[in-house]
Length: 253
Image (cartoon, rainbow, N blue to C red; front, side):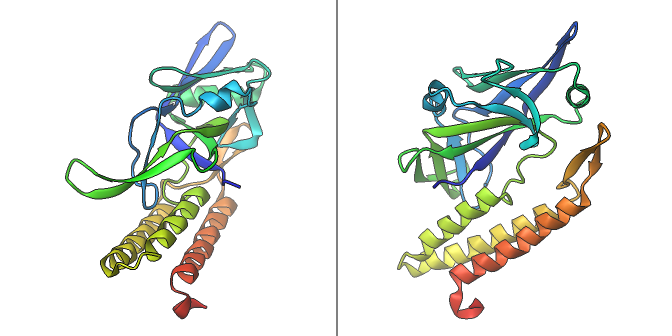
């Protein structure tokens, strides 16, 4: 079973007219190439969401991908979502009688919360493809193209899905490294070792960065969640040990 993955975008806005409060934006843009996601970069092909949306998947709009903070729902008519020529566009009708909704709307309008994200799984082995590419400087990289995905939610987020440190990105990095290490080419193995070291260093820098903070809502306002931050660091330590065990069992088992 494919793992749930998260991707982020920077197009979230809040509007109001009378008592109406709305969050809207693009959760994904077609054709743009992401930054490094932990050993690979990614792009979304036009039509990647078509099958999922046509199947009446009951997509929800959440805050920080938390099912405890539902902002709107497709089946209730409070979330409108669809593809256009540019990407995956959404419009979520908030509840003006809900204090949490009002607070979030104000935070987005102020710019304190300014990003959105979507959660998905790849639909089968043909739902994505992998290929070697080069960037504008001629630096090689692996490109993953999402062609057919199952969409679960779009979310307003205080931070992106910890690019390079999310559980899904870690799992992809592990599979990517394992694929490289199955090769017999010595130079490729050396390259993979170096790349994996750089990926681990990037993850640790990200998880220790002041900008990588977990938050929670307390009495209608946001507070830093120290307990969740410690859980994140523990997950990171466990992941690094798992990765080392997989790649170098002669040293770690």
